[in-house]
Image (cartoon, rainbow, N blue to C red; front, side):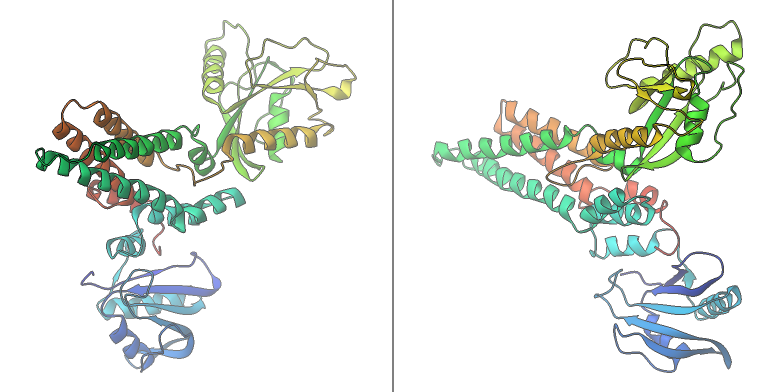
Length: 427
């Protein structure tokens, strides 16, 4: 438990009907007695006049959460104030004069982690849930917050602890004629965990793609309507549209939601040979961005031949309003009239879902998890091939340590500041 008490505005900034001030720490009960004249019943919203130094601050709903049955595991409280800036400032000044300090970003959730209310995977899910833009992101974050991912990793760790205990027995009692079935069962469990970890890693980064969003690059020759197409798909003017070829020279981006997945559409320079140094640099960047994109949308003008396509690129024949047909296999659209755009959006939404949908356990959502699991997989592979039982035991301990770093059981001090600094102040 921390020995100081913190407070922060948990609701959004600006004028609103209600502003929520959160408090956490050992002084919460005395602060409530000072402001409200008495301590409200636990976990019951009560209406109280807040007074400090003979001054009426506000009439507010007050909630009291005695620890450890609170979000942070400490004594906590919430003041549901009227949302005017003057009210918020007056209450904040009173709390400061009572010895409380403003919370740092993510400090409430950090205290929840340090007090054992959340593991590190669940704490990361809190941030993902607050940041979720789409329904699919919300569902993924909730599954992680409910402990499914942490339970999966702890299950593997529990299995490896049993294996390590058996391995230590084989090391400590080599003359006890332990049955050969002991080592056979040990190896079977270790191989099973290794196979599960390897399968979990072979997910094509689906969870990370959903959490961070996909990138779809729009490429093609100059003057085929790529800029008009991104404007139509985004529903706003992202790029300058001009009949002059080579107008787009730099990378332009627009964030949209397709199939419940956040997707950044990237408008690129027209692909052609040019002696113009600036345009040539734009073409180079366009090719690089297309190579790194999750999907490439190749735009041509209706009636022209389709360029060679690398699967799974999406071919779009723009300017269908001019009456030309083809090319074969292309989606006919008109960014000018809107013809075919709904079909194109449906196709892009389908691709977005294909790239992010998962079945079974919750997917990996962070590079930190992936790096730790990769380390655990390497150590388990080494353990299986270890020529000596002592070396196998050491590899098992290192694999366990790698799994523990994901949930926060071991060695996480170096990442806590980085993690919780991403949170908003009141969380």
